[in-house]
Length: 280
Ligand code: A3P
Image (cartoon, rainbow, N blue to C red; front, side, top):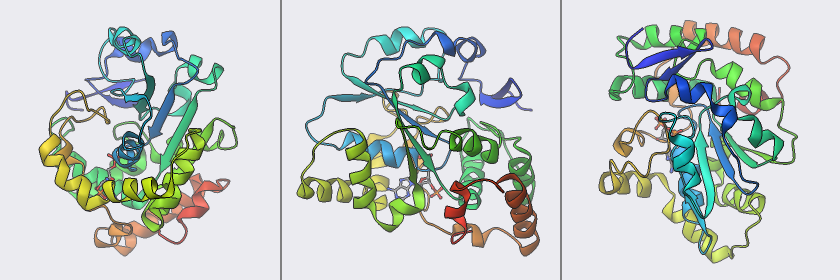
């Protein structure tokens, strides 16, 4: 493996997520009003973060990912006065104990795995914080083996699915956001217990469209205080195509078959996986 990633408990992480920090997550002091924004990489994390940041008149601050940095992280997070919105790509098992005990609100964003794989493939190619890769075929093998950053998509989603009926967890689908963004925005706002008028929801919908966010990325670029994914501070790397079903341009029919076989095997008891039957 290359020097930009390291393994912790069998899972690959960026070296910017230090081993000491990963080892100390259970010492994190959660606040009851914390909100966690959780996802496997490339599932639409920046999108949901943007929705939350555009909710008017609420006192919330988006922090950088909980797993990004070194042992001084918890001090940094203690400095926030406002209600914290904390992004992370951790699986359920890795999430600090305290967050589970205090039943903090958690939004889990999930996207169909073929599009996620294609999006992550481009991230690997374009992002200097990820290892270099040669081909799509080679990358897909790594993805299916879970030999990519944050591990297997299947295991990540399954770890969160076990908790999908917990009252403090909201599951949001990327495809649902594409189909009806205002509806997803309303869900998020209701879940957070905030009141927002319909005209304000329309405004958030406009501000969080793919084109709007892509255009703004260049302006806001590289603000280290606005880091949502532990793998980059460069927002220009994030807004690529923003589409559902782009996988069709990458998967050969054999690759699709191999993928579907593993999907069926891994996700056989998953209700969540049924959402992807149309788009996969
Ligand atoms: P693509 O690479 O398929 O374009 P994350 O924020 O978790 O890193 O996910 C990034 C993916 O979400 C990218 O997918 C990106 O284009 C897409 N995305 C970000 N903002 C979006 C938006 N407003 N509408 C649709 N897709 C968006």
